[in-house]
Image 1: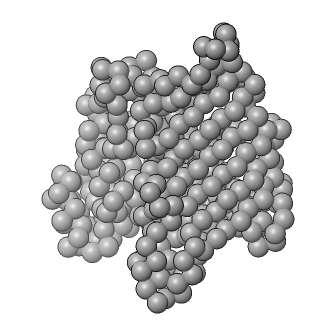
Image 2: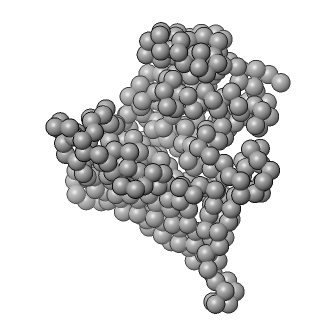
Image 3: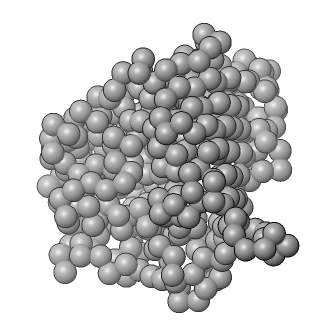
Length: 368
C-alpha cells in the first residue's frame, strides 16, 4: 500500500470537506494510494496553522506556492474561490503534480481553456470537483439513461435551487462580479449534470435576472437567477433553472427526465432515492416507484451495507477523493475531467452571450 502526500489549498468550507475526505477515503474504499495529509495552505500563516491543527495536516503555510513546490506534496486539491484556480492549477501543471480543482474550472472561459491546455501539455492527472453528480442515486440515474431503460430521453428539466442568498438585507462577496453570480458559481453544477445526462448542447437561449438589485444599500453587480432553453445535439430539448434566492429550497439539485419508455425524477433534498416510471404492464398498475439506494447502487456499499440507510454530503466528497486517487494510480483522469469542466464553462459563456444578445446562441460559436 503506497502513501501519497496530499496538499490542500484553502481551509474553509470546501477545504475542510476535502481534508476530511482525504483522511477517510483509504479506509472507506481501500484505495491503492493512501493519502498522507502533508500540507494545507491558507491566506495567512495563522489561519493555516489553525486549519493544520484542526484537520490533522503535518504542516501549514500562508503561501500556496510553497505548498505546490514542496517535494513532499505529491498531489494537490485546489479548494479556493474560482478567481484563484487558474494560477494554482498552472503551477501544479508546471510542477508535474496531479490536481483536483473545485468547480467551476475557472473564473471565465479563458481561464478554463488555459487550465485545460496546461494540464494536457504537462500530462498530469486533473479532475474537477463536481460532487453532486457523484451520489449513488444520480450515478444510478445516469446508468438508466445510458442503458436505454428510459428509451430516448426527449426532454430534461434540471434545476439547482437554493435560498442561501434570498435576504435582500444581506451583503457578501457573492454580490460582486460575474464569477460570484449565480451563473458563475451555482449554475455550473446543473450544467454539468445536464451535459452528463443529455450529452452535448447544440444551441441555447438564456436569461439572467438580478432579483435584488441592491443589498444592504449597495449595488449588486451580478445575477441571482438564470434560466436556459436548450437544444441538444441528440435532437432532444430541455430547460435549466438555477437560483440562489428560491425561498424554501435548501438543496434543490433536482431533475425530471422524460423518455419514450419511461421517466425519472430526483431531488437532492432526498438524495438517497430516485422515482422511476416504466411504460409497461397494465395502465391501472403503472406509477412512479420510489427506489431507495443501497448496496446494489454505485459507490454505496463501501459506506454502508444497509439499503435505505443512505449517504450524505460528505460522502460525495469521499467518492471524489476515491476517483482522484484511482486516477492518479492508473495515470489517467476519469470523469469529471478538465475537458468536462471546460464544456461547462463553454455553456455558461453561451448563456451569458445569449442574455446580452436576446437570442439563441450556437455552441459552434463558443471557442474551446
